[in-house]
Length: 225
Image: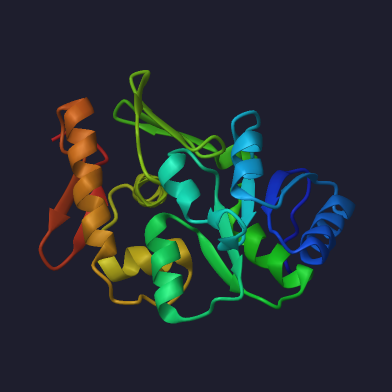
């Protein structure tokens, strides 16, 4: 049985009026609170005032590229890309920026809902903490003993995955496939993101909480070493 998306606050950023209205109507009927934007400027104005649980984002907008939002906002909620661009390079760029899924137009609203439902965490799983590090997956905020840890979208996704699988080892390809639910594209992006993530965690905690073991991969520690 396919999961549904209900009772969520979602922002749709799409300049094609008919596509945007169709998606908005569909998700409103499911009992969601929907905000709409047709430009990056409108999207920024809305994001500056409202916290969302999910975003549906077009890549090509009248005043810029949708991916610009990832560099402008470090605590975006799960972002699903909906675009007519379907080349592998487009997917890689979006995933490396921090998108959690990618759907190529045209697609049905039912398919879009199914893909988004996989990415939205159940509310009772939104908050996790270990070794002084806390994640609020709804607000996409990480803190250490109350001090904010600034992470990119991809870094947050990786840290959330590792913390919810603490003590288990995963190599870079397995982490990619587990987070994005797609075959690994064999890029070095996971290693790059984990390297940056480690440095940020070390700077704020003075601890190396992500361990690497040759032949096994990466894990988040279950106790301080």
